[in-house]
Amino acid sequence: MGVLNVTPDSFSDGGRYAEADAAIARGLALFEAGADVVDVGGESTRPGGAAAVDAAEERRRVLPVVRGLRARGGGPLSIDTTKAEVAAAALDAGADLVNDVSGLTTAAIIEVAATSGADFVAMHNLGIPADRARTLPADQDPTAAVERWLAERLTEWQRAGLDLARITFDPGIGFGKNALQSLRLLRNIERFHHFGLRLLVGHSRKSFMHHVTAASRAERDLFTIGVSLQLCARGVDVLRVHDVAAHTAAYRGWAHVA
Image (cartoon, rainbow, N blue to C red; front, top):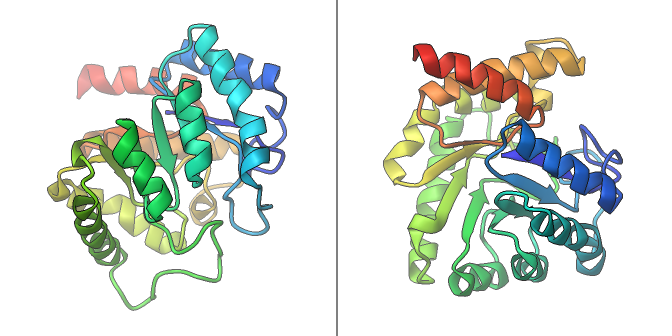
């Protein structure tokens, strides 16, 4: 899954693709580089000061990009949003799935999931946008805490009549977790397989890497690829990343000797 932020303030590439034409060109380039799906987002959820965006502005940012990519023959598209009205509009415009970082928790977006027939990604979090001061308790196993949350959500989704085969789970690296907790989740990622959902991990260039690598983008991308290959080996289904070309090349090498 290639990241396409149509925002002025996303943590890694905010402002680079804020104009529709630039975003469409970037999306096509991501597909050309090997992305299986491109994730279009119109509101930053980064920790530390992400500006809230209303639904009308978010639609203004993302819908021309979704329509443009669909018209130009781009591949499968994801809409990265927490708002039911944005999700529904993007699906109508040609998006194929919804990446809901708020965890598929509101009645409105559950209704969209129940009636649209689209696939959804549901991410664990302790609040959107992320707040660095609010993390899982330090004395608890973070993987167990996320497992409890997911078990509760599965019960709610089943009660709402959702088709669980259409839901992918994201443990939410960096969302409500400190750096050590994020690393522990990655090390224990296989524990989520028993829930029977597809797994998505979005770890690309995130701040937990500061503790183990240099802050430069090049170093973060190399660290990201190293983590990604380990996640491939552990059966993760979807990797949400910025540098698709490098991941595609690294994966080909890994797959040939795996």
